[in-house]
Image 1 (cartoon, rainbow, N blue to C red):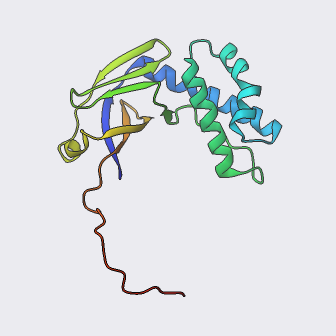
Image 2 (cartoon, rainbow, N blue to C red):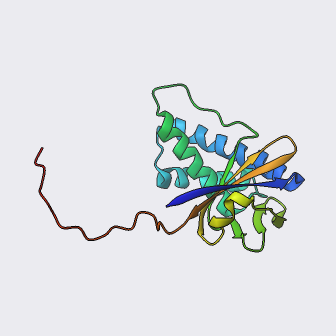
Length: 174
């Protein structure tokens, strides 16, 4: 079972710059994919990776790949029937496993920025404490006016729905 933990990270200039650069890279990738009429991640990687690395040298390689994946997913969702989508310059960033390290029990998250890795202290709200022992499977960073909202997707064991062996009574053939 997956649960989402939301925590606040204080405003940080490096995170703000990373958000801007990342979202520009996503838009560039959308533009390339739109011209090629593809949202295939392999094709998009071949056509965009070197260009994005050259255009945004401060953006870590894994973040470039996250930008490509996010652009692909935006195009999959919208399709090519509508107008070309645009990514907000202050939109959310979806991180992958190589770009963040959560240590929730210690209240620390290490996040890749354009200025390198930075560690941030986080306070887990009381109602989310029960999920701290789970495995973090994903992270989204959402910029706000004076802080960043960090959404962590945590996988926990589903104790409530353990299946018991039941004697079969019949089969409904429809």
